[in-house]
Amino acid sequence: MIKILTTAAMALALVAIPATGGAQTQTGTPVASGDAVAYGADAGEYTPAGFALRGRAEVVQGQNRLRADSINGFVTAGDLRRVEASGNVYFVTPDQTMRGDRAVYTLASNEVVVTGDVILTQGQNVLTGGRLVYNTRTETARMEGTSNGRIRGVFYPQNSGN
Image 1: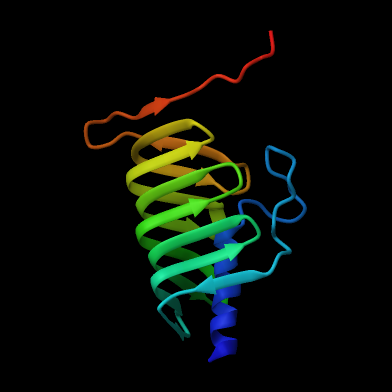
Image 2: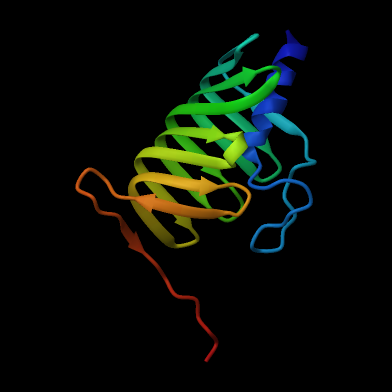
């Protein structure tokens, strides 16, 4: 059972990595792709179609973390294709925090789609909306409006030193 859950956690680690290889974040900090993977949940299971972590599910690698009430991974032909997190979802990188009701990470496109009362923070800056598409490779984000079609944000300019 430990080997099976370790395999599932290794696959989940892909979610916690905002880029691959020797890439760096905007602050020049190397990405944690070679770091150990820690995970926890109240319960977990593995099947040939994927895996599930339930109850305070969390996967941590380096400074990156995915946390939700439940995290499911979907495997096709032995490869992890998609990870879905639901309930109190948090995806945290060294520079940003994304919060929503649900998230779907598609490995082929490097996109995390967070929906439902989405909040994206970076430092003091805050952006809210109904749907966020975040690319883990390029670290770019696109926010779409809520049911009323609007996004909202508060941004604090950096002091240029002048």
